[in-house]
Image (cartoon, rainbow, N blue to C red; front, side):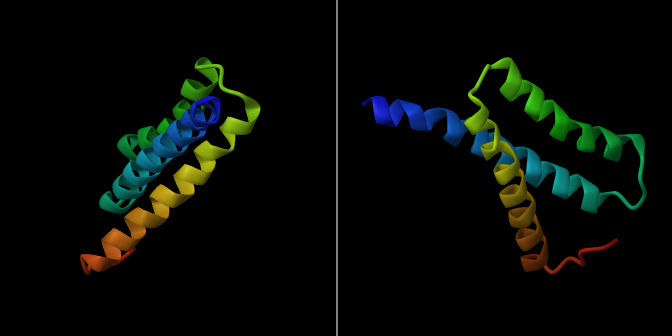
Length: 89
């Protein structure tokens, strides 16, 4: 049971990273020019790290967040391509 509990924090950090990475990828591709809205979506990446720091996760758990960001951004790119949309606007 203790081994299972030690997996919850890395899974949560990865899922948070996937969600934020997917949303940032979506909004970056959606807007035609760099606006304050685009800037706020990029800032949300930094705020995700703040959330993990606020929850006082171990340093080893922090690395799962950027891995999740990468997975989310790649997943969004794949979905975007499958829908037949160009990657650049």
